[in-house]
Image 1 (cartoon, one colour):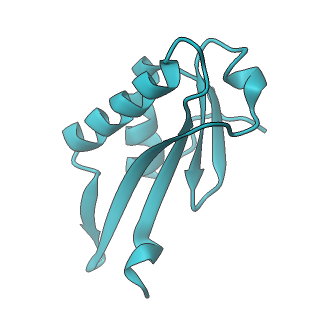
Image 2: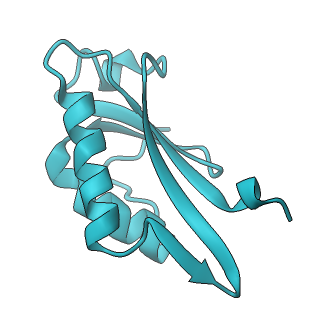
Length: 108
């Protein structure tokens, strides 16, 4: 397995006028460090999590026109919408730590 295979990526839309996407990305990065999930060893393999901002995820209803930002977590491809900085701890703990989707923020 190549080293890039064990990387989870969180792409956060930062196209809002009020900078909420950048604030969400910062909150996610802080929570990853706080919860010790940025880099970890599972079953003898290194796993990393990267948070990146991007210009558009084509989910404007839940981003530019909503109260928060949209984000997609890969490799799962799970999309979340209307995410605010206060949601970062729950997403990191539930989705990345426990492997459970945060249903209240999940987009279909």
